[in-house]
Image 1 (spheres, rainbow, N blue to C red):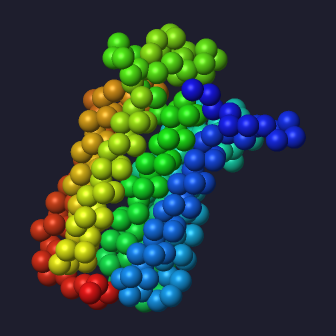
Image 2: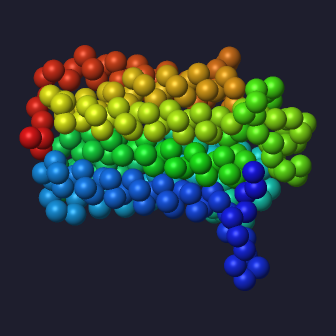
Length: 257
């Protein structure tokens, strides 16, 4: 695996930036089509996708910079080089959530109905983004003797951390998890009875998979006690999903049907 896609005029174009761009493009197309079908005002899905992209990238990058504060204090010019890798998914998720809530309040739309639309396309974009992580060599796994273990170039962080051994392609595991979740969401979306059910489905599934995958992540992980920060956030999101599930029967679906 190599992080450079190609060079243009002596400037390297990184796979991470390419795949993140494709991820947002695919997700925005999904959000636009889904919002139109659900009866939102024309263009609402496109606008929501744009602000989710802006706030998602910002939130993901801020979380990454905070988690690697010592490095960025010594390399301030690298703070904005997100094209080379360096975003934390949960930070991006929080940023995107704020974007949806603020937009819905501004446009006087249902947050829960719009949230279902937003979450329905999230696994698709996330899956493509994880392919970028795989090609870039970030978010790699621990050393493994399994036949599908992957090697990264000697100078990369993955190779250094693993002493040159093959590592779990955790990025591909998460790609598969997100594609499966996307298919499940598409299959149940039209049968839901309350706004927010897709949000609940996501919160009760993805955090569980992410919690388990953290055990085989080989890159540097911020810790809270015996758990990684990502595992702590996963637990919090799962519990929030349970709370939402218990309250959903009282909610209507203003845009569905």
